[in-house]
Amino acid sequence: MKVGTFAMLCRSVVHCADLAHALERSLRFFALTFDDLAGRLIVEGAAARIVLTDQRGPPPTRVFAHETFLMLLHGLACWLVGRRIPIRRAEFAYPEPAHAAEYRLMYSHDLRFRMPHTAIAFDAQPLALPVIQNEHSALEFLAHAPENILVKYKNPHGLGARIRRRLRQSLPQAFPEFEALAEELRMAPATLRRRLQEEGSAYQSIKDALRRDLAIDYLTHSDRTVLDIALELGFAERSAFHRAFRKWTGVSPGDFRRAASVVEPPG
Image (cartoon, rainbow, N blue to C red):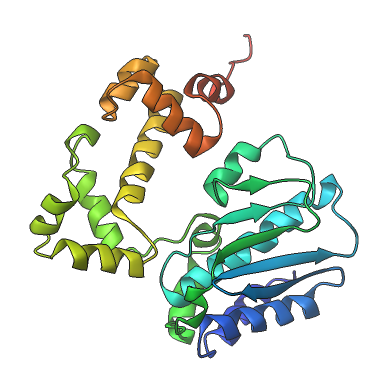
């Protein structure tokens, strides 16, 4: 992509009425930009998929192209409607790469490799959401690219961000129960749950993300035992922490620590 291509795309799709039209326009734009890589939006009932077609095939040298294409589209879609759109399943038309554990953070816990096509699947409901961005907000969005594209979308002004800031003030074992948090925020529990759903989030996922980030930090930058970390994060036993960490990253805490360790060169 030439410099300025993605900026031109953003300024084009902010004028679409809803996300479905914006994604269709984005895919047509990329079809004009690339000679051999294209995507299409497929909607089947309550499910939607963005499927990539690669005329050159998916040898290892094309893995980065497939990853980047999907992340650009997903990051753009989340920004256009101002909420995170969960990816329910990610499929890849190549063997599982060495860095596949990162895919659970980048895409979804449901990963499938050696598939006929590279694709991401998500709920179709967000396709009807209106595009809430404009050319002015596009300037701010582009000013922070690619950081806000490479990480999962976060609305710094939303309710989910407010809750994350609140939880960071507490130890994980002291996170409030959902009903207590709703009372603290002066909301009915049903209202709090609905507003988080509108942002594509949930209280449990916010807590899990904070615990995951703390676990990764402790494993990478401290010599604390896995049991100490588990207890610090509010897990009653080591095995529960192991199961949760493997779900978050695809590997055990011990394997993650060994892979993250850096051996200093001699001398």
